[in-house]
Image (cartoon, rainbow, N blue to C red; front, side):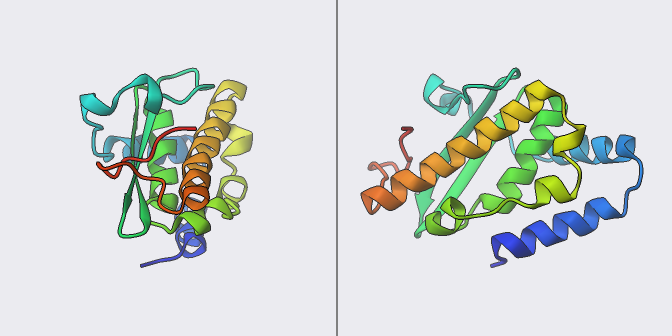
Length: 152
């Protein structure tokens, strides 16, 4: 399994092949369209990210000691951002997620090309995923019987 930094480096390389930001936005939209839809049963207030202008749900399950993340958004570009975050952080160890430096966001120029509301939403998504990781680390397992990690 690839590490968080190895996956980030892959993303940086993929985005570096595109000079035009319109192409990069299209890549985000394409990534988002490939995201597996989140089941309606998980589109709950507990999984809804506070601080996003669009609606974004992120769910975390602890599976074999790794955080399995699923998510969805109702906005095309945000859905692509979600897909990138899941690619980097899903199926990683909670300790690694908690201490991850998500440098790919800066290096691909994503933060500077997002509107303030989307940038705030990105930070809120990262904060929630790291909260899931912290809850797991602090609680030893942090999962209920279904394997779903509760929100803080």
